[in-house]
Length: 498
View (tube, rainbow, N blue to C red):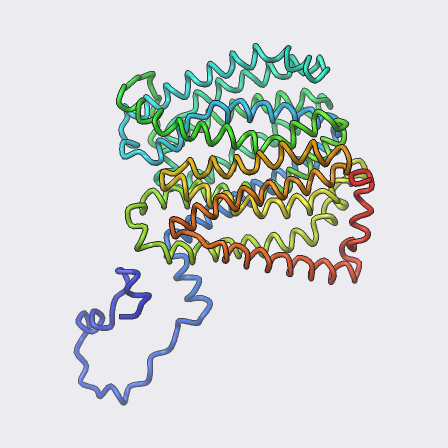
């Protein structure tokens, strides 16, 4: 039996094939040798499609690509219809909304994915009850914080915006817990349909409102109605069931026991992931914050893909195999290297051409984003490494290691941004962001190495390969005028680096 057959019990051996077929009297030496099909691309592709993990990866990647294309087109259309200052306001509002959710995250979804009671209706109803009560509390908190927040930023227009956005917390609290069971069962096809439907409707609603109103309220009410639609769609997948308000002491204790570490980790995660937006919103003109938000829209796509793979493939798979860690360690590391290498090639191409993409898609009001985006993409690579590591550690019931990574990033940002940005400009802030992601990755990589599920050497080798490929592509494409040269790229950021 070959090693590949030993790994897959469904692959028949030669003995099994002989035993199952007719006996042959012909001398084997006179028979022509069997054709070697192993190297044919068609057979390689067919074998990949027979792998459940490969099929799930395709179902994750294709809908994600469609979603990101729709979001990109939506962003371009909105940039034509609205001024950069409006995007700057929404950067602040979305940071507040995301922060409020993360600072109160009890790990309800993760608890459902990891729990052996995930298919128990009483457990799901208890999880729904905790989620609903949290949503009500967050809505009340947002309504109370609306006026103080507007005064803190010296912008009275923020108060009604925060109040409207605060109501969306109750929508999140009413989502069906079956959306988490879908993740646990790795029904990525259904999840892909759900996410695509949400994106299509969100884009249509927001663009329609922006065309009709032409002001920041189009983005606000677009967010409001999109959140409502997303909640309704969680009930559109079989089996349909309306959850009930239920409180089971044992199950609630299980959720809160795991959730306390998720709460700590996500609270620090928010501090680490949003410090730049909060700081830039306070010290930079809203127009420049809006341009920064546009560039973050692109760079966050890469991190979102990594988080999607982590949440829907790595996390549930590690939960399933965590008691067989020694047996699957080598296989897991190999597949991890392949996944990261594939993402890395796409990143290298993006680094080389992203400035040209911004210049082509956006008018002059947003051209500083062409300078920011390559730097943010470089930072996003380390965020990708961190996303894979974090999902693995959550699957191993080790959220404390994830919290340590976010502490490292937050410490670098909270010291570096106010220290360097006032003296050296926004470009220095972008470099601080990169070092923050590197600090987070190193903390997670060391934790994974202790579990024999990752290698710092592998990550460094892939990173160096990406850098070499990106620089080579930039020089080659710049030499023939397809993209800006390094000198032209630097000139694009005159308002950013002075």
